[in-house]
Length: 63
Image 1 (cartoon, rainbow, N blue to C red):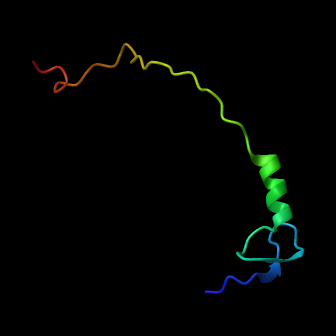
Image 2 (image 1 turned 180 degrees about the horizontal axis):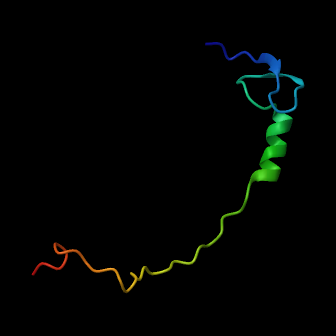
């Protein structure tokens, strides 16, 4: 397998590009990274509380 750049048409913008691997060109990848990425958010940890109509199974309550 060759590490030489291959010339092909960018699947996103349609311009001719020369990249090592097939996919969006460098300019499209940069644009995608700037527009699609999102910072991580802290999610509140909520304790599970079963509904009142839920009963434990017989194996879990066996003495």
